[in-house]
Image (cartoon, rainbow, N blue to C red; front, side, top):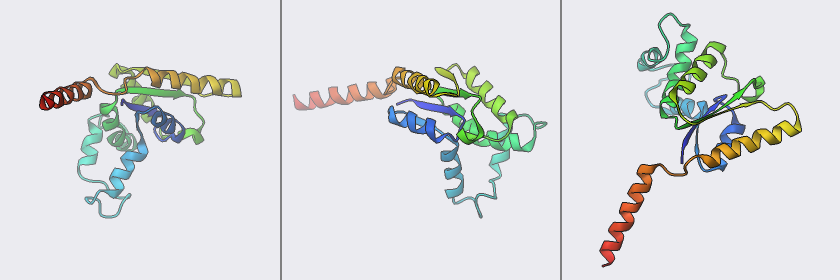
Length: 167
């Protein structure tokens, strides 16, 4: 199961497609859920922890607007976990708007520079394009490994230990 970064980050459509093909979508919703259910916040989602601004500085310079750094404090850890990515170009805002275009450009740049398998598709504007859109995403997701090589090795080791125990 690959961890797939989706852009736009809060696209329920992309998250659902990724899950249907047996992978884990890396989404903004999961990051926000973690923040608002974390006991270290006094009155979520208004408060932030003292570590959040520092984390944002890891991805964006101090001169960058605070909103960009704040978003990158949430998005940056997702980028670090990324094993594959899907970027939808020119989506309408109701498809999954992230907010600030500077954050969007920085996010796409960091994903592209990470060197993971990447699918970039244009948002569909007709029924035919929508079918192609879903088919391209399906092909991409099917091409990704279902298990990590480490997990496969552990599974094989577990099987060999079981076989030795049976002898």
